[in-house]
Length: 302
Image 1 (cartoon, helix red, strand yellow):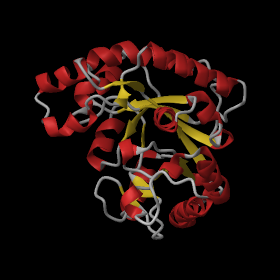
Image 2: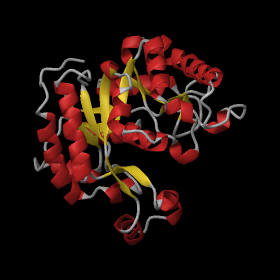
Image 3: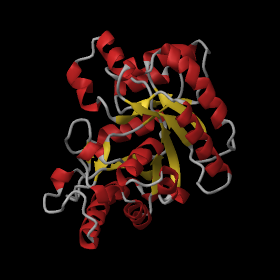
Image 4: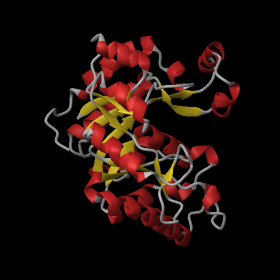
């Protein structure tokens, strides 16, 4: 397992000056940024692919338009990214005929079929072994609750025959929404199909975070929806480090399949991400993450 961290200018400087060590940068599908990252370290791309509306198409979560496959394929070649990720995301607006919190078996079957219909587009293009599906949380009330049920995610991954991208923070948020224990929830996901893991710190977005946004001059509209909410994409605190230790033990014991990479999704380019994880935070947390990753087997092959 390798360690990747979101590319950012502060991180690039720290890596280039050998103040911190990572295996590769995690980059969005932005060609110019990918080129900058590759000038410093190897990089891989996390794609903005969304499936789940059931229209037999794959949407771009950034442009809200159908995916441009030539762009995806060029970035795969340029970075040698080994897997194509898709987000299992079902917005409530896509299913007005189904109550958002429904647990009706007929509704659940409809949602699973919608996932599989869209996912098949990606699988036919790249093959089952190259596709990984990522778990998403409830979207603070915007997404269909059944889409975060562990049994739904397991059915989708197993019936599609693809791999699983475990986003630990998404899972913790989903478990909170469903009012179940987070570790129990995660182990009910298709953990034997894991190919990649994402991790962030989790905190309530209040106090110092709001003050940091204000001080940096971030437009209030950017962070207003998150104020007071328990959210991801923040630096690690001790509760998060304890959760990471548990995750490492799950891999070491064989409960989870070992992923090719652990992606730390903190920091990035543009507001508010570059404000959330500055140079000092990265300098403190990157070495601890790198040491944690070294606890796992180092000879993993994708």
